[in-house]
Length: 269
Image (cartoon, helix red, strand yellow):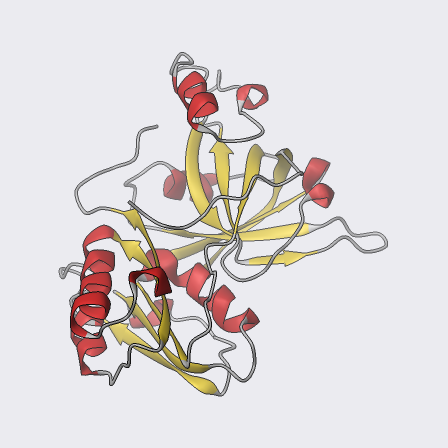
């Protein structure tokens, strides 16, 4: 089970719409949302994440999405008829621009694209300006504890989270970030502190996530005085956590982790 906490933001259910959509790298598609309730969204930076409700069927009803996702409200939502229940997926804020005079707030979200597979990726590619969505802010997973160094390990699914943390972490931070992708062209600029070394690794498209990240992690000189943040494919996350705790002596409480997805398993729609 992931140990990333959930914050129930006061903004509740935020209704907004697609403003524009563009391919930023060969396998990353960015959708910008704006309008309606988005001015009530409170940006936290780092890896702030939210539940995104996407109406992929004509009868999907955004007004039935709960303003808070608890065990009870999730059960009630999942009990809705499939033809009226929007698809829910978890996403990270890639960037947020507050409202200014004459300009509404804007929120960027990056979607990983694997051809026509999945639900959210194809929706993002075909999303037209004005398309409605709803989102519920869930806070940040990055919760560092006092430590000499920081470590980030992820794959392409956690790139937005890693880049957000690197952008917003203290400028005197030191450590490493390992970001593994399956296409060199999917790399994005990072704003890491000078003392944090970012390792971009490109695995073969046929290889599983972690094929390069885990060996690279084992080659690093890591002490137990470390705070680690690892998100992405489930097996990769398990491997990172096992190495840090069992081999490096890092306390379990110093490792924040979440499996965003699992090979061969799709999320319910």
